Length: 318
Image (cartoon, rainbow, N blue to C red; front, side, top):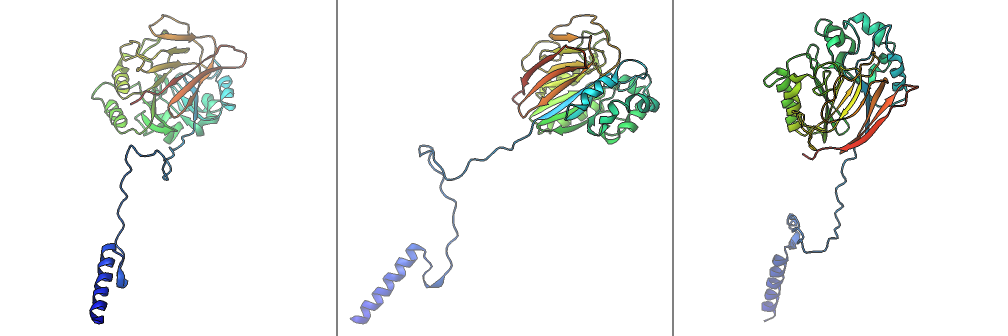
């Protein structure tokens, strides 16, 4: 009878151990499983900390176009502005005038804006292109100007996708430049987009608008780009956001024409739709502060001039 009770006791212990998966007798524990997600009606408190989004610092992006011609204008005055403004410097083409020669880069640009070349993202203009399809331009700026001979490239600055394009070559649908841009935009991870090229699509200046850049504008607009910067007309002008056909659109692109880098200035020759600010009596630079989902702008004039233009905008939700 006693032996029967012992046997029954051992059987009971075995059954309890098996039920609890406790590994009695030295066997390995079972593998853990993922916890059941909490019900949405449960308390909002949680022991798992919320993910902290990556902090992207603000970036200063400052510059102008139509800059250095020996013996005339004042590229040195605008270069002095850059001396006291930190950040990345952009150029909007016609870095030198008249013929885009290596000598003009060395004699006119190098002593002025050239002292900031190590932090510069350049753009090619028509006068730069005159020098044998930009050969002195590519030689002077090196890798900063992108692949030699093309005149278009892209980079990232903070949360922004920065694209420099070439308005001296074909830019319509099917062109190599257009197809390259299309691929860039399709794979972009930037929160916001800024494009720059020399000849403006919209302008109140004497040089006609460059309609051959309209397809590029339309493509940028389709992908939610925020800003376009241009030069060519030697004046400052800011436009309201608009589409490629010049219709005001809150989801359109805001354009700045900043041909105030040092060449002699032009007067207004027309007034076009959506122009919000215009000035042609002061050299200066456009200072942008590029934030993770917004931007601010300020036109900074050379010493002795008082014109200012400033404001802010938000990036387009994609």
